[in-house]
Image (cartoon, rainbow, N blue to C red; front, side):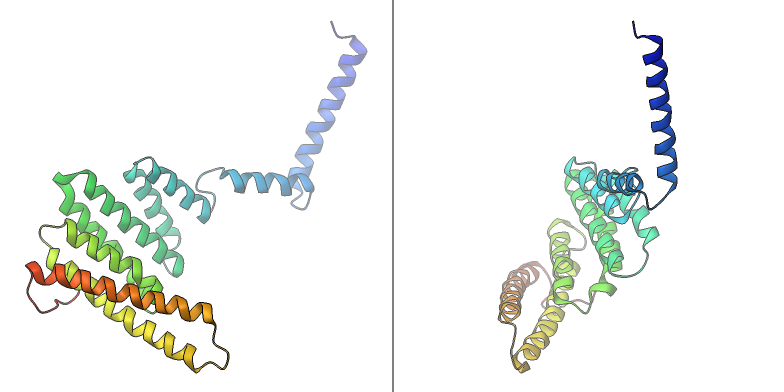
Length: 221
């Protein structure tokens, strides 16, 4: 049994520590507050405490195949960040999630693919001036075409249209690098690799498009 004096001393020390913790947490500049904020941000308590934490939560749900929950988090995030580069990432992620949802539920595939198209289109304005930003959207259009029984031709056509836009932007980037007095060789190689990918993707999607669709390229839809 603890001696009464030791019990009183222990209680006093504990009380002091509790008071110190409370006071420190109220002081935003204290070491304890800084540590507490770091732990909270790192561990994402709560899960919707920041943009990065909500993205992590989306990724965890996606890894577990909980696509509906990931989409819900993505939509909540889009409401908080309706404009800018961040919104393009979010809309693109939601589009991919609907695409994956379509692969797991054939009975509602067309419904989910329409949603994938909707969010792909929402991502487009923020990515339209970047060949690298357009790349995943061109891939999305092709994948939707692969899965859709009703929009196959339209989405292949959309993919080709995006690839054409990518080529134009990539060529402009290449010309700009050539005009530089000391061009960035790594950046030039990056652009060359992208142009090669665009050519390969255009040839692949073009064959898919002409094999079962009209020869002319349909407008975006």
